Amino acid sequence: MAKTPKRAASRRPIGRKPDARPAVSLLYTVIYEPQPDGGYTVTVPALPGCITEGETIDEARSMAEDAIRGYCESMLADGLKLPVDVAKPPKHERLAVALSAR
View 1 (tube, rainbow, N blue to C red):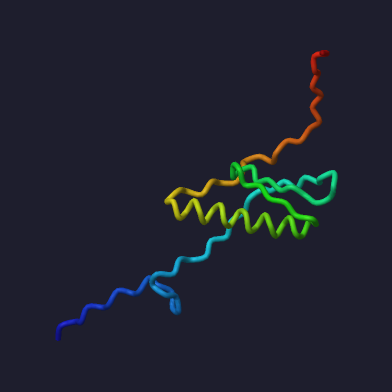
View 2 (cartoon, helix red, strand yellow):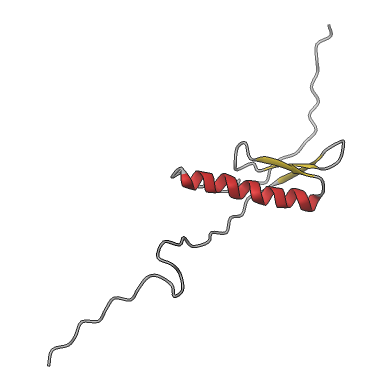
């Protein structure tokens, strides 16, 4: 009696549509800079030009999540690779700069 070949298992998880992309979780370093008039400016060192702001730290965090998501989705739509997070934490210091007298 001949054996019937087994069907290859589907690689698609049960319940997922064939065209659905799996969710990706990203982790990026963000810098919250308090502003003199209140609120925070948020920058993402690994994503050049990714900057946002919020009135409170919670709003700034939410705005940063949205900005990172938009930045990365735009890169993926353009077929670009997502940058990895910065390898080392950003360095902060106060730098004295001398100006020439006029």
